[in-house]
Image (cartoon, rainbow, N blue to C red):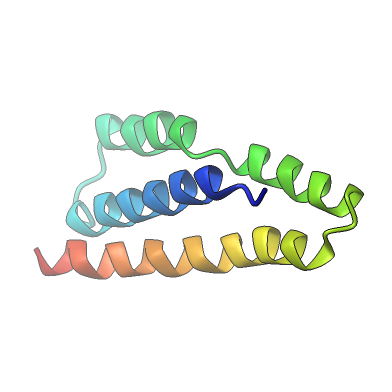
Length: 90
C-alpha cells in the first residue's frame, strides 16, 4: 500500500524542526544544531521515502509515486514553515 507511516514521520519531523527554528531564531547553539540535524535528521526518513517512491514507480503506480515524492516534499516544507511561524509566535 501507500507508505503512510513514512509520510507521518516526515511531516511530524518537519513540523518539529520548524518549531525548533521558530522558537530559537535568536539562538544559535551546538545543542540546538545537534538536536535539529542529529535527532530530527535521524527521525525523518527522506531517503526511505524516495526508495518507496521508486518502488511505486516500479510497480507501475505512477500517481501514487508522484503523490509520495512531490507531495511529501511540498507538504513537509509547508508544515516546516507553519511550525516556524507558530514557534516565533510563542
